[in-house]
Amino acid sequence: MELPLLAALREDGTIDPALDPKFDGETLLFLFKKMVFLRALDEKGQHLQRAGRIGFYIGAAGQEAAEIGSGFALREGDWVFPSYRDHGAALMHGYPLPSLVGQLFGNSKDPTKGRQMPNHWCDRPALIVSVSSPVATQLPQAVGAAYAARMRGEKVAVIGYFGDGGSSTGEFHAAMNFAGVFGTPCVFFCSNNQYAISLPFARQTASGSVAVKTAAYGIAGVRVDGNDVLAVYTVTRRALERAREGLGPTLVEAVTYRMGAHSTSDDPARYRSAEEVEEWGRKDPIRRYEVWLKKKGLLTDQDEAEAASSAREEVQRAVAACESAPPVPPESLVEDVYAEMPWHLSEQLKWIREPVAR
Image (cartoon, rainbow, N blue to C red; front, top):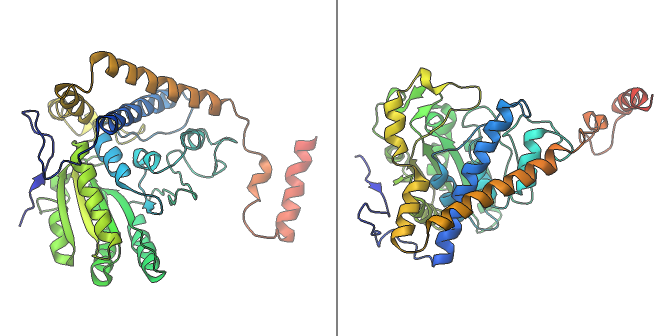
């Protein structure tokens, strides 16, 4: 029953025509630069936390192809229900970089006013629903939003992101079953990075994949090489189009690897070997795509160096602009709770303002 692992980029430098998105050179380079940028952003986030300038960070090193490829497949009007490692897809869907960086600092540059821990972002204009820490709780919400969109007659798709650890939750099964029964226009995008924090995938399930589980729910499932940005894009685009056309939900399992720690609070050396990390490092999605672009004559060593330098500079500019911002006003403690502030919060607002005035 196991599903094949789809890949576009072949080792001999050719591409599978069945998965070739047929992009022009400019678009192919655009995807490369976005992957390089995401890596630079994550490196900076790690450094900021280690220096004590932010409190926490969750990176996506090794998963750039899954993030950028799937995010590029989205179109305006689609809804995104992300997990905490999906900022790459969010940026591709219109989440502003200054908002993302401001959210890490939690100061007045943070649209959520410091009310969420770092990497727990959202963006109303881009239809990106708030990240939350509980694993996979976004999946039933995504299915509900998809059901509502269909009831309103909107020809949009809803994508719910999660990791392999999320497939071990009750929320995953409830969402899959509801989506299958009601044929909701949604895509379940699983970045199977082999670990639910410290628990390897083989100890989470007796099945060989996440995608094979779709047979039990009567929905479509597909496995894709999550380190192949073009294959991820093509598979995700088809799944989203299928949802918009009213053909039901799809689960996309992107098989990839988390090259770094689960978060800045994690030490992966305690539960996986250096040999394993080295083996997956040879499958680095950025390196793999870079080699293919060079074989096609679309990328040079100088282009590569300039892309990396430009990405670091853009990230540094965003950090400088956000880190220097003042704190969130203390009044925000009692704002945005009610449309009209009730008397007890008005009293608390006075108490807040008195010491500030002094």
